Structure formats: C-alpha cells, structure tokens
Image (cartoon, rainbow, N blue to C red; front, side, top):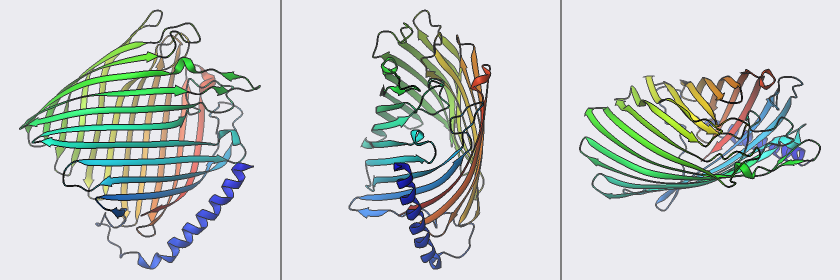
Length: 413
C-alpha cells in the first residue's frame, strides 16, 4: 500500500519535471558536439561555497528480482534519489560535504523496497610547500544485495547494515619525489535478517572493525610518468569471539605493490600496479595469498570519447562455513561517447570471479550495460538504459540470469 502511494507521488513528480523541461526547451543551445561543458551543473553560490542539488527519479523493470535460478519473479519499481553536494571555492584548503538518499519502491514485492543513506565530509589542509593533510569521514546505511553469498536463500528481506568510515592522509612532494602515508578505519554493523516463516538470523557475528595503515613513495622519472612502491597492513577484528559456526574470524593482512602513475597530456591517465597480498586467519581457516594487481586507466581517443579500464584483486569478508574469505577478481571496461552536445551514449562490460576456498564454490558473474543520456537543457535530462547480468557457479543453484530496463528523469542546478 505504502509503495503504491509513493509510486503515485513519483509519477506526479516525473510529470512535473518533464513539463519543466519542456518549458525550458527554447533555451537549448545550438548543436556543437565539440562543446562538452554546456550541460555541466552550475551550482548555487553560498558565500565561499557552492551547492549542487540533484534529483533523479526512475521507473525500472526487473525480470528476476530475487536473482534465482528457478521460479524467477519479475517486478517494476521506482527509484528516487535526492542528493546534495556542498564544496568550497577557496584558493587554499578544501572542504566538501555530501548527502545522498537512494530509495527503491517495488510494486508486487514490497519486502524488496528499501532506502540507502550516505552522508560524508572530506577536507584538505594545505600546510606548506608541497605538504597536505587530508581527512575523510562518512556514514552509510546500506542493504546487502540479493547476489551476496552471505544472504540466506530463504531471506524475506535483504540484510541492512551500516558502515562508519574515517581516514587520514598526509603527503609531501619534494621535487620529483613524493611521500604519502595514512590510515583508515571502518566499523560495520549488521541488522538481523528476516527469514521465511517469521524467524530471524542474528548477524552480530558479522559486526567488525577494520583498520588499515599504508605508506607510498613515488618518483617522477619523466614528465607524466611516476614509479611508486606501496605497502599496507590491515587488521580485521570481529565483535564476537567466534561466529555462529564456532570459528574465530579475526585476521591480519599485508599488501606490497609496485606500479606506475601516468598522465600523458590528455590522452591517457591513471595507474597500474602489481605485487603480493596475504590475509592471515586463525585455524581451522586457511590463509589467503596470491598476486595482487590493479589498474585504473582513462583513455581519451578523441575529445568526444572516454574509455575506462578498472581491475583489482580483493579479499572480501564472508561468514560462509569453512571459508576464510571471498577471493575476488574484478575487471570492468566502460566507455561513453558524446554523440551530440546534448546526447551521450554509454556502455560497459564487467567480469567478477569469487572463489570461496573451503566451501567448494566459485562464482563467475558477467555483466553488461548500455544507455543513452539526453539533456533537454542544463537543468533537465532523461536517461534510458538496459543492464544484463548472469552468474554461473560450481554450485548450480546459485546461478541466475537477470535483465533490468530503466528510464530516469533528472534535475540538476
């Protein structure tokens, strides 16, 4: 009932925003595909700050909401996403505040409706020549996706959890030499999971604190090229001494990498690295180790085309029986093309492999997405998209295929 009320209000909001966009149609600039800044949000000046409010409303159709192998259930849902970004415009130092609320309202499956919240602040102090001190803090209330290996198959609702994050970094440039170090802290808290039949699953054994410290040194040996070495140490401590299966999941880990930061004029920028990682667990869990690697590269083959490649190796926490962690390999390739000054085409393909050593389970997820974004003017845009994902698993019941179609109307100032 409540979902339908919200859906009705969202339909009214969509109509109002569309009418506003049509009224402003006459302000649309002349066609010029070389101009990429016509529709950037301008923001509202507030003293030494600038406020960027946005609102995105979407209508979506998902043909396999629960991500199951058999008995797929389809549904349509609305998404409502207001956001605010407040950023300083000072000549020195920086302060930025962010608040985002993302709500999903399902029609036939009201138990799948949920809202996520993200509030954050980060800043930088420019201390003296070449030295900066940066700090960040955020609090998120999230839901665990239906694709999570830790979500029980008989869960009525997705598990809610929160993440409090804090970080501190200091970096100093001495000519061609750069030195950086810092620390992060994350505290995760999980709510009980409602199961079919009215029972609940206590998730306190998933609550944990994660600490990490790191150091990085880089040397710019040529214009646009800098080699670096980086080392990190982490400690993951759980609230309960043992989990539901009687296992102590506390662990410590290290990463040691070498790589290259690069910025070749406007053609290519980003970083690539490789090294070694290891996460040490207490018996009977087995340590996880192997090659570490990652890349985040952005290529601009033409002023109208942007191509991004991202890859990384992660050791993610899990509470699956006999399994220390999810050993995850993640690769993603995306591209967007400014077809006209007011139309952008985008697409991407991704691959994720999760190995759950000890559980005899390996998952492989392939995803692809395509979309088009049309700016009616600098305040109103439409976006239509399609996303497909499929998971194959050594335990066949965990496989699925899913398609989602979406159309969004956005407002920005």
